[in-house]
Length: 163
Image (cartoon, rainbow, N blue to C red; front, side):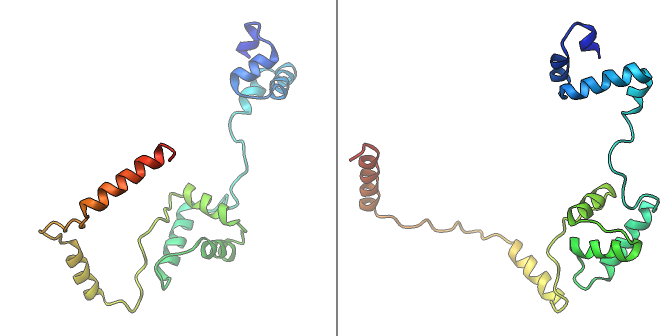
């Protein structure tokens, strides 16, 4: 509104605030009809409400953690969480909606590779320790014949000149 007060056109004001001119015209109508209170009242509470509104977020977090704890792989897929939310609270989420809800709840689903139930944990620890050690000897450099190197440099140079 300040841009308009300074004498800018509706189009210039809209461009200055990153909105369409239709939005600026709507704001002017609201201002004329209801005053500044109408404009201020539109700032908060916009957007779609959560499907799980009214359900305690801690209850959802605990439920998902329990589901993960009881899962044979130890990790869950978006589809499994989607089914869980529908069966437990009767709310249908899209897969992307599930991930957005998890993000809002502060649940992170980046995890390490799951461990197969039949994997030997002792053997795994031995392998981890063995792979962590670095060789003290530097790896040998591949053998290149000087003749081959100079020939490849000549071919590269002539190719770049267009020969």
